[in-house]
Image (cartoon, rainbow, N blue to C red; front, side, top):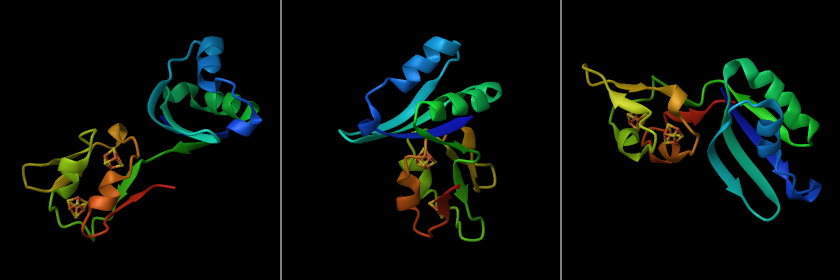
Length: 128
Ligand code: SF4
Ligand code: SF4
């Protein structure tokens, strides 16, 4: 399950993810990280059965966390199967099926947002 973690460095520079991995032994994969001098936004992947516990631990350290249930969402009424999203996606989320329809492997999405910008029909959005 993917979790989006946001935190402010004003609250201290504690290495939240490293500490939680050390304390729990749960394997956490960092999929994407945007960190500057003031704040950080990190997308992590955790085993489904540990997600709630990891969320609680993150919150207890003063960070915010959101469970991303779906990743990217496609409006099938707007999509014209042009394939522009296939070439732009760094994680091979999109592919053409045998009927030349674009399909998604949502579990691979790291929510980088490139496909949202690239889609000429505005058919893609980020799930809330
Ligand atoms: S770029 Fe947009 S319209 Fe084209 S296949 Fe992808 S989702 Fe559909
Ligand atoms: S948000 Fe990024 S990783 Fe996710 S489907 Fe779009 S291009 Fe691929």
